[in-house]
Image 1 (tube, chains in turn brown, orange):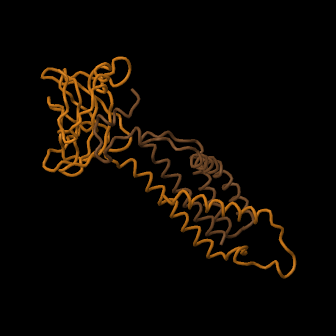
Image 2 (cartoon, rainbow over the protein chains, first blue to last red; image 1 turned 90 degrees about the vertical axis):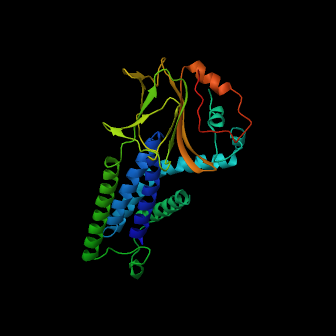
Image 3 (spheres, rainbow over the protein chains, first blue to last red; image 1 turned 45 degrees about the vertical axis):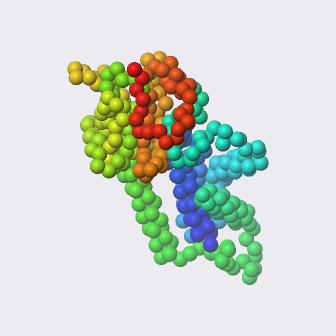
Amino acid sequence: MPFVLYFVTAVVTGFHVYTLLSFAVYGVPVNLLELLSLLGSFCLLIAAYVSLFRPHAGARLALLACLVMWSFYAPAIAKIVRTRWGKPAAMSQLMGPTVGAMSKHSFIAARPS
Amino acid sequence: MILPYLAAVLLFLATAYSAIVSFRQKPDGESAGPSRIFPDRTNRPARIFVGFAMLILVIGLGLRFGTNGRNSAPRSFRFLIPEGYRGWVRVEFDIPGMPPLPTEAGLIVIKIPPSGLLRTSSPEQYGWARDTYVFYSNASLQPISDSGPAKLIWGKINGEETGSSGKRKYEEFFVGSEQQYKDQIDQPKPKDSSRDSHSPAAIP
């Protein structure tokens, strides 16, 4: 049970943060907390293995890794919750009339000059 | 889309479980035996097997992601633009029957004709790139600045549009001074949506 839980969590969170980090190739700046979370996923993977022969020590390591990962996930969740509760921006005002057939004129008009 | 939620839920469960196990006092007596939720240590062969499996997994993932970046195709373009050209440049990708783009010194060369429109069968490139721009003439090549006060490249975009001939991936940018670029933006948008979007207008 602990091994499976730690292992699956490490893989899922690690893959999630990796996909976020991969957006860096499109110019998205890398957040330090994302790297920290990736490190936490790796520690959780180690904790999964440790839990096989020292469950108590593995749990402590896993707790530490989880707390490190929360440093990324907690602000992210808080931001999502705040955004959902807040008033959404009227993005449709900036968009062109056709979706998928965006002309250069409509695209540029949406940019601040 | 479900991945972030799944990650958050699993992380919550792992945190709660590890916190309970970390701060749990071992009960004495018969109830201190292992359970499914709080199991005892596993036997040695299982530990060795799982250890090797995890090691192979980690090394495999490391090699996979490590080689992924190195073996990727060149992504940077070298735009050759006719000397004195002012206006929009448009490159359309994945057009069947059109010539592919040549590669020179690790850069994909895009030689723009005087019309400003180039169609190629080569695919659009994504990822890290440092594109360069050059004016070409019969005699020489002259670099074009795409930053700073002498910047001549503006409004670079890439995208995909759907028309009667199917989907088109394209890349566009404007060549000219800042004032010329702003004049282009301020131009009223054509009301006829069926205009030929594949013929960029050059400024005389």
